Image (cartoon, rainbow, N blue to C red; front, side, top):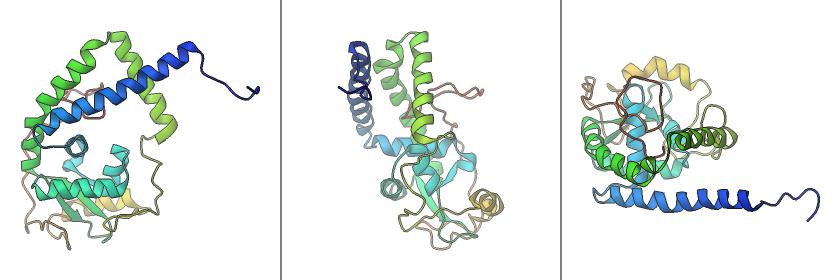
Length: 227
């Protein structure tokens, strides 16, 4: 071993393998619990992201970033949710290439029904096994790794901005454009897969879901799939 090689010592090796085994065992368990309702882990994750977003909508690129998934994978996932009537895809009036995913009332109702079972699975297989100190350490570990691998704002850097799925593209002034045309999207979807009515869709009435991790907000904590 050269002076530049830093092999893991026994404690480091045990910690690394412990985390790897936890991930490999936990995710399939959570996925199987959701599959009872014929919902995949990724589909649930997208529903949670949309439920937490302002007006329960996000640009397709933002959904991919927040789930740390490729845009092509998120496009396929959103397509399945659109087919179930849980999500609508609408286009920006200002940027015809930019698409939004919007949680429907049916989607909000669906996640409200799915969340309790998911929370129980998360609690039973992880949260209730850990002490408060261990949970605090887990949050700290997550923040540090996410900062290193996904950037300061938590957005994915794995997919370059040049990659698109044919229904979405990054725009330099996306934040400004989103604020300007958000109110007008409903009345003119301009080729969206599920056309919106001429009048704005009523606000959904389901609970706004937040992830298991502490949010610092006075909102009911239900659970998110990636926390």
